[in-house]
Figure 1: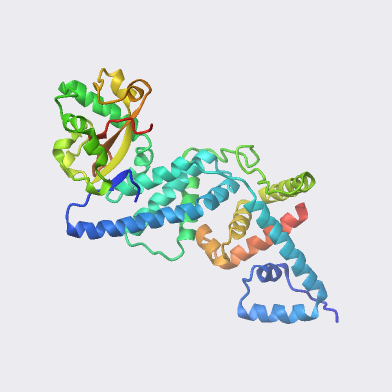
Figure 2: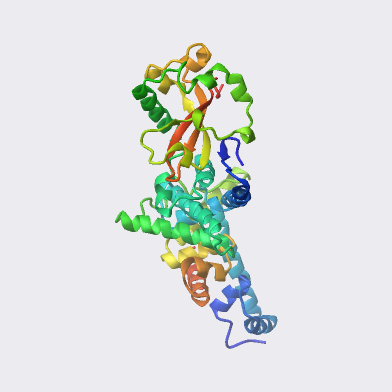
Length: 185
Length: 218
């Protein structure tokens, strides 16, 4: 619990409740620390702007908190979070009647992360990254989402849960997506 | 040994991702054991898969650190809020300092409350005692709080207290100058004081209480 906020506990029963609430709150923050960049990356590949992504990530974690407070199902919260963030983003886009507020290749985000090496290696790494990125961006939405989620450690079953698809359909999207990437490289 | 029929791409992809069913795995392993072509295809597929993964993970993204602070503050006060309020309240705490300062000034101004004689007097006369109060020692005391004018909740109905820092300049601009207790840096250099906001069931601050009027950021 941070030093700058105080939960007011009026009586003993509420105190027990407050302890649970604090535990849930901490769980939310732990999950946030672990997942927020992965969700941000996923939304980036969906073409969602940085600002909207941050809003949707906030939304997802606030909903997670409410979900946990309401004794919601805790199996696979990671997939739950990605799904809620994705749906929030798509709803926002639909409500605003606009698509892809930020093209995937804007300099704002999505740059290659240099991780050492000599200048030649860095250049090569950047070129390879750019080619692969363009190939991924060239996929249709479903294939791209499947590959991005899979790259972030999701199993097919979890991807199916995030996207509301069957596991076999996810397998098809992964295979077709990879085939297209291979052709593009 | 050559095979007229090779493993379909979908099974190769699933093999690389370790997503094969037991039956599929038996079939694929048996085939791979005897088919160098498909072993090579699997190797290339795994390489491609790694490359896509590297590309995704090497994509630089960032999230403002303020988002975490906002979330931490929000989950501290949202337990009883309806979902419709979540969105509206998402930005309330980062802005709480300014909102509370303005609301506080309205109350102070309209009610004719003065620094030395109003509800602030207790905290002003003994700021050291207030500073020394640990978070766990904070007790609800309606007398310390000034209700804010726009809140539907009376202060006693509030269920959370959130501690925030408020700009001194916002107070000073309204002609409220804490005489003597604040040091000059706090008075003239836009210092910040520490205050408790009572947050009502509607998610809005319903009252405010000054905790530490020394320049808490210096």
